[in-house]
Amino acid sequence: MKKTGTAQKQQQRALPLLSEQVRQYLATCGQTRYLVARETGVAQSILSRFMAGETGLSSASLDALGKYLGLEVVMHGLEEAQHQEPDSEQGKGNRRARGRRDRGKGV
Image 1: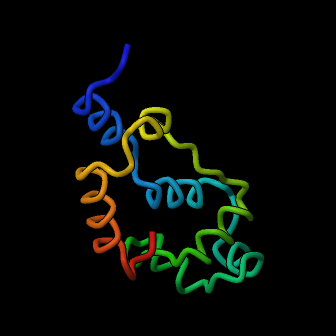
Image 2 (image 1 turned 180 degrees about the vertical axis):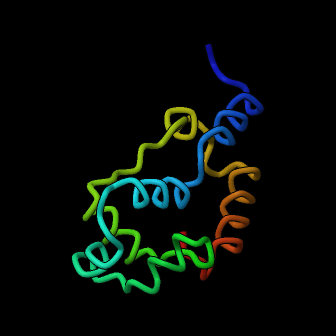
Image 3 (image 1 turned 135 degrees about the vertical axis):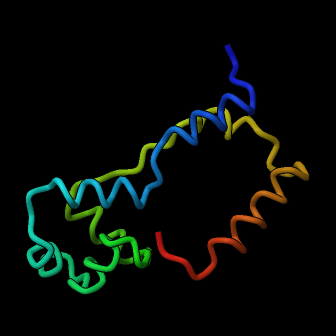
């Protein structure tokens, strides 16, 4: 049975944001921020501000943390996204909106 757009959006909303998942994993991994910072090269001050929700992470920092913690991204609904027409007006608008909204922001 194929999901409707509304059902897919509800499923996506139920999933925590990637940044929240990383925060949760860092909080429960049993490693100190000092050790994580030393091993990943991500400044301890950045980790502290990220954990407090005061800042995001750069893609380089996110990559370093993901590699250190053994995290990977699992895409939900990828099969449906691949079947969408890439040149549709809706697809173009969504790509542009994401690009503007996310430009210069970390996770």
